[in-house]
Length: 216
Ligand code: SAH
Image (cartoon, rainbow, N blue to C red):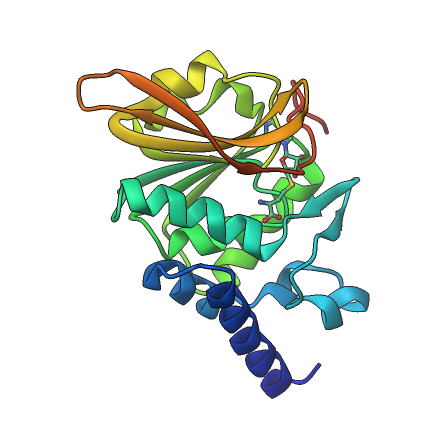
């Protein structure tokens, strides 16, 4: 796809997200800013702006744009301008790139070395600097840089990890896919200013599993 064709396709993607109920201008702008085709292998780039899941190697996938947009919109409706965001599962770095447009600094953890290693260069290539990456087990969060106003998980956990709850700032929000007896669901966890925790299911979900330990 040529540069112009990609720009046009990105424009169509933003339109599609709007049709699906994404109204938050900052979220729409982030999707407009980030060239999704640069996060996938050349052979699949012609599908980059469709609302589909795409493989990124190591048996992992890039989530559907509409699913990511929904997560981000929910997060920003609680915390319109977060300072620090923790992302679990950098993967290709696409969502990390979206997040750099939405906060002061993104902290992103990835367990697979082969994926983690590509992200820094990709994001720097796009001119982004407000991110920190770690190769490690995201179940531990990243205590050193917390608390975070927003925590976003891109992989499905069996339950809410204690470390994420601890590292969520008062007033903060976490969006994470969770495994239930009926299948996966998107869970929103909100911590009040007083530290009370409220949880609710906000959507269905279909994510790769969040696995313990790091690889490579
Ligand atoms: N947001 C990513 C999607 C990645 S898929 C993107 O835009 O490309 C989910 C990612 O979570 C995978 O890369 C997987 O390796 C990672 N993951 C799974 N369990 C993890 C854990 N415990 N800690 C950190 N990353 C994890």
